[in-house]
Image (cartoon, rainbow, N blue to C red; front, side, top):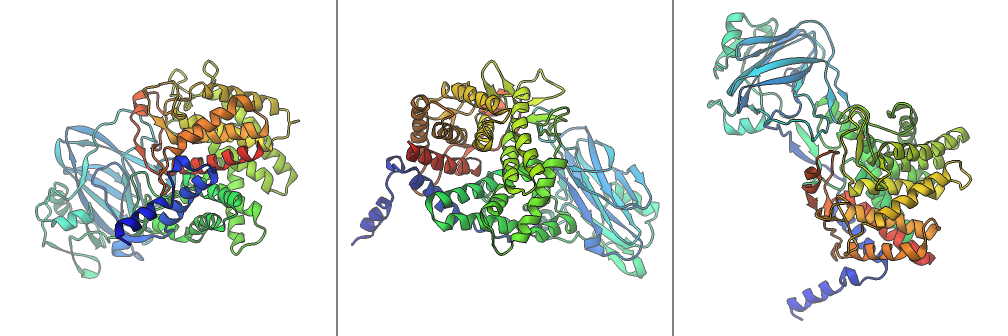
Length: 599
């Protein structure tokens, strides 16, 4: 038998996806690809110092020089700007710190203090600020750091845009040592800084002045602590654990809501098919993070690599990184009475239940979860899904009756509160977000944002008793939303990324979510079967055209911030098998199958 014949037989083992009738057989292809492609391992890489000054820079003198006694050390870099500009920087440092820019002292704060870097939603909070007046071209930045013998770091960053896509964004200055000809290019790649020290007392002004102006003499020696000879060197280069072969959109095992959603979907797929391998994928996901927490903490808190792999797992105060990715953990606790490391799951979920009730910020006067990004009390429709499914699971998991009632009522009230904040009564659609202080700015009718909302509402209707005081209001909202969405479905079965704009590209993730919600509606009698079953099937057939026999899914919109600029949405990139859409497709297949089996 020829190689060509063997190849043809292999290709024909899996038929064209559009011809597969059983929805579970379709989404099993997707699940199998996830299993093949996800290693749940780290690989060692060198720390990658970005060459644009648009993120945090930390000089950890402890890692380079050690601690245990008072001392002084220095760090030098250059900022290269395309124009004269004012550059505000934020600072956090231990003990005393002085900074010179182009020979001028611009910051001087002595004293004894501990550096505290606090994670916020999309940034790190720092205590101090300094304004740098940058010249066009090369600027010399020189830092003196003192230690009392304990912590010894200096961190600096430009102010965070906090996820804003409407703020004026100029070009960031370049940072590093590339303009110093005496420094080898390999060293330039490794680090943005030179360091000097340690000393038992500050350098003399006559020594500081030329250095602060950029006169770095390689080969010059200084007398350091204990009369040891020191000279210019580089900070300790850290070796980090990183995810393996990330795509433009990330990997299947970054810590975020959509990868947590994939694990949750795989649990549901395992139940629907009876195949344990999908549940094993979900357990591997959960165990990877619980067992790796100390490693993640080491990279963030000891190596000060705040953007290292999976750092948001350390309870970044954003629903994307707290409640939403926790769904597979609490689901496993609800479904499995005994498993090896159950105590780790219980501890983790207890902390998330506390977060859900007492820590996540809410819109003033309402129950709705809200955010501080891109500005205070921005309410994102996305957060219906980021919060409601978890708190519904919490109501089913807890053995405390008061807590059970609280979370059930909270879920229902949040849905109705969002209908006051981001719902548009003229279109019966949700806007992507609402700015509390700028209500005149209108964000778009984004497909996946509407999907997050209707998915959350369908989860609520699945568990909310019909005699609940808000049940009829929630059901009415669901029906109005579905009716509006159905009227916007394209001829292909797919919906457009901006729902009301035909010139916007058709997109799979939003389509998949609408499909699963409507299929639930038909199966549970919330929707008229005659009207909406054809809508569901048309959508499902459209989704199948976007799936390859190897499980690849096309045309998934990349993660999207909120904006009142329609072009921002129209120009979002699309990727294959971005997990923002993968888990929605899996659950859509399960729900379509459930609907067909029921009917």
